[in-house]
Length: 148
Image (cartoon, rainbow, N blue to C red; front, side, top):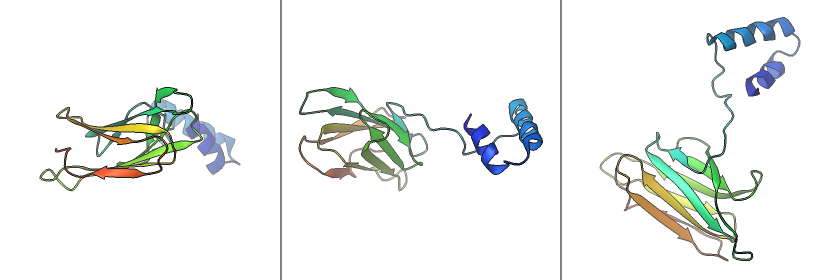
């Protein structure tokens, strides 16, 4: 669907060419890379799929809790929202400077809700959880605990 919209924008005056491209795409002979829609998920894979990130949150005003939904923006950065996709609440970043050094894990919140970000090394299963208390506007990092 998204590639069809992209084709209409790129080739608006040529319905015949659009049909030909659609046929090539349907046959698997042509793919528009980078056109895939990013679907939010409860976990985001960063650092070439080696680090899984998940966010749990709590609204201190209503005591509502939940699991945030996120998308990877690139291989290093992910964003999460709590209740609405149009309201990004937490940013995360994972830096990798090689197997001899631990991953560097960052989080930053645009919310006063309480949240906890869990970074998991997919290969080893080891996890590190970074927390932000309710009512505070802050972020944090850990550069010692999540080894390769």
